[in-house]
Image 1: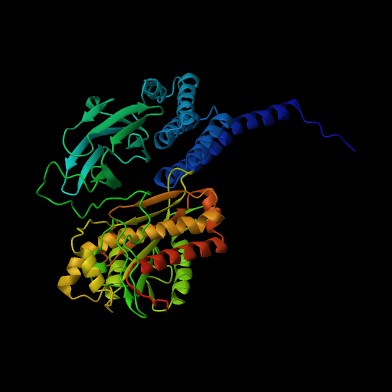
Image 2 (image 1 turned 60 degrees about the vertical axis):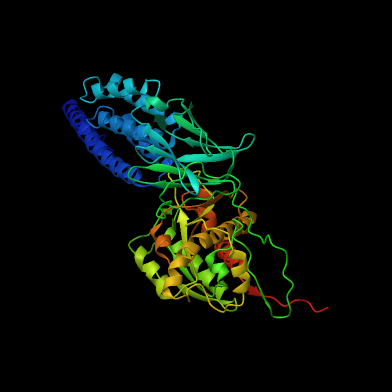
Length: 535
């Protein structure tokens, strides 16, 4: 066979072509990878359910461009984008490794690409990151207000944007503290101690903790219970502290607590149980209802109302899919759970069930409320799945609307009306208006029982389940309903382990069974007919 020998000229020409083609190919490949990373960045930053690892994944995509194509015009841009994305991860999740990664990326951009137009800007970002506090990323706590109202003392923390926070109640002395991540206070509130002479909540303390966390401690001496909810424009965390029954308000305010921003009750909501002695009854005699969790008889209980028709509302649907993560869609999940719950409720005597939707279709919030009101529902249960930018967030929580009532003469009315055959929605218009207040009080009890049943029902199958308690937020669905209404967040779809459980048919059955138990337990706290044992 004849050997093919290339001439020196041909070899030189071939090497020259390769040398010229290599930069062009690298530039084209870097451009494609950069465009892909930018698209991924837009998706991550726009998603409220994105986790810290999602941000880091995209940062690594940018970094791979720098490593593989350091001499292209995209390397310095990739470093700039990666640095800002890592900074955003630090702002959202307050993990130091993201801050350190940001510093490394900007330093690399400054040192390796000194002629880049972004080098000077990277140096400016480094100067801010080297400051004692990352002022550019911190949310500002602008004010702390304390307001004495007829039923509660309200503490309002005003911030310039929404932040994640945690809370914990402590004893000896009784107090509650809130940790607000990624925040700092205005100068007058820095490490401040706010003291007040009148009424309850006489001291509020603010302090700085690691990782740009501000701790706010509120004195709970002579506070029977407290509740938390959030408001927007501007973002505020509101803590309502209820006086112990023996404590009279020191200051009277002419206006009432706005019902549009009702309070949140935390997980220590007392167990609902009768506080009155058992009633001696003859066969078939109606038994008076139990008191509410606050030891009172709501208007509904005074009038002897019961429950027969329940509207189940699977949240989202259609063009509003809700949260989605780990191949679980909130709209599909809650509809499936609602259909399972419907089957269980239909097996209970005397209960009618109406679903707001039975397919993947869109319904506005007002439409859902209209269905409940039009169907003359006695209860409204909206089912949702939670989502969080924090991938470790997990647990169940239940939301309701709350309103406090007086106790005088309620027990007498409850006993006298125990034999009433009417249900919650059968009142004439003027009495129905009165029961709107009752709706808020009953919603709290309904929420407490739903929450307790979810925790007890799911904990055996989920040993890391967290009881996030009973809370309040001004959901339009709950405000619009004319009957006791509750919104249950059955799990965090953005938690990998919870999402794996949510894919299981058996676990969905457990959720439906737990919701059923909560509905039945609530129904049992209302008036009922029992037959006394013959002697």
